[in-house]
Image (cartoon, rainbow over all chains, first blue to last red; front, top):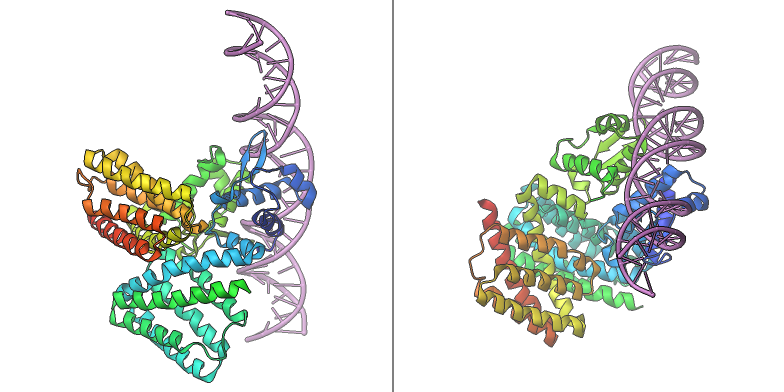
Length: 230
Length: 230
DNA sequence: CTAAGCAATAAGTATGACTTTTTGCTTATC
DNA sequence: GATAAGCAAAAAGTCATACTTATTGCTTAG
């Protein structure tokens, strides 16, 4: 990531803390970091500042850099999400899948209210594309359309916080596919729901858009939790 | 906040960017910041690192510190939420209220599944306290119980991301109360719903817990949106 | 008119000195 | 002996300066 020295060191330290290598309450010291990574004071301090911004640590005078308890970490930070996926993929995916379940139906309802014509057109086109690629058995193209479909709904919701979760949804979708649990043809019911959602958003039908999306994510959550057992 | 120099400068710069004083695409320069705030290079750089971690800016060699487009900002960062509340309270409250609407029902369902005995007991006690304080017309005590009630459900959901949103919910609840739109006695239907939610979670009834919470937050969202007009 | 090379620029890194706050210990007082 | 005042060490925080690296726009050669 952040090409320079800062990025490299941050990546290592961040993953270690996320993985629990440094237990909450334990302390790091700037000088210690300088020696360990062979870096200057400035880089060490900037890394610590970044970790502090993610609320993984807090610096205290005369004490050191203290690792904060997990429940205080900023779990929504994309960087931390990545580190946690690396540390304990199952647990993090479960958390993210549940979050998605909560957000996407409401986002769909909001999109039905507020989506612009441009968004609606692309949404309908994507749902048609999903039908076609599904029939053809082109799983890669189907996945790309699926990802774009959900990204678009989150964006069209007009809620910046919803929109930002598109990376989370993409991670979930691609993980499920990459995990090979997907049949050669996507489930017909899922394809139909996508079409219904697009149509409801086009028609401005909040209630049914939300309901259809709830069906969809409920099924997806179930599938994800099953996949996590194996 | 971060008592030192770093904290002060960060607060000012962050609020400026959040408020749009520095348009996306515009560039700041480290040296410029040193002069403006009378700070050393290290402090200026550490402030920039923190802003970069919130994804408000990105540093480019031979260019400067570039303000990123709004949609790339990390809107879930508590610090940024605070800055946005200061910059455009209405817009941010609307966004947060919608997020709450999405999350709390699913959190309630999860809590019905996973809440520990300790949590359940406190939840029931709090719902009873809300009945009592409501009858007595003790709005302050009612609000405290209300805040704690929702915090507890988010925590009991067992989902770290849900749990972290308790600050958001608290902000929404207190804003609505502080805005004086609350009648002398809280709405009886709201009080009843709190009791029902507590009872459903105790009984492990996911479906009804989620439904009751959905009723509750729907009403709250409506009230909040009305309040935002005035 | 394109491509190669060059120089200026600003972030990034390194180093060392100095300041401030906290904390644990020591000592004086009741 | 318990409590409070004062002292000293430790580590983060701040400052100033010098040096490195990558990028970009311009200039020049083919």
